[in-house]
Amino acid sequence: MSHVLVAGGTGMLKDVSLYFASHGMTVSVIGRNHRKFEELIMSKESSGFINPVRVDYSDYEQLRLKLNNAVNIYGPVETAVCWLHSTAPEAPHIIAEILNEANTPIKYFHVLGSAYADPSVINEDFEQLFYRFKNINYKKILLGFVIEDEKSRWLTNTEISNGVIDALKKDEDTFIVGKVEPWEKRP
Image 1: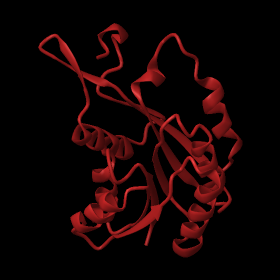
Image 2: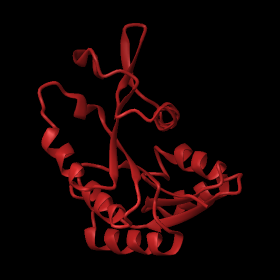
Image 3: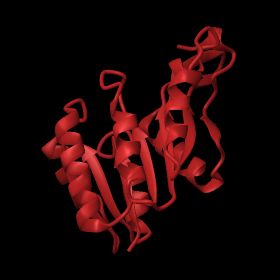
Image 4: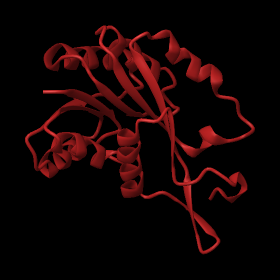
């Protein structure tokens, strides 16, 4: 059974976790909220398996411990989808480092907020840190916004999950969900 990882998979990316499970995969889901894990597990209607990785990913020591445990039990991760808040700036690289150690190719889809698309900010240094991992195929999914009737709004969780699933299927290096231009229309 394929092993995938979804960080943020009990909230905004809940439907992504369920998508993988519906395809019979073992889905290790990083999250903190016990109630949300229970809701996720109860929502699963498939042959896949949800492995709750209960950890606050800003606790880097616990993140390493729990993720290594998941890999040791369920095998190498083939695909990782990571939505991680900027309050834990090292978490994306820690996850990549641990997954890289398995010496198998991994698709690492990094879900990034619209601020990442800010034309006044250069993010190349952040991305370059992923290229040191020989087994990580780093891909970006940028979350934007929607313009309706000349007004803009943020994407809903359903739109985000559907967009991320579309990005997984298309397997492009950079995929935008919604719009990130024109920047001045951002809500």
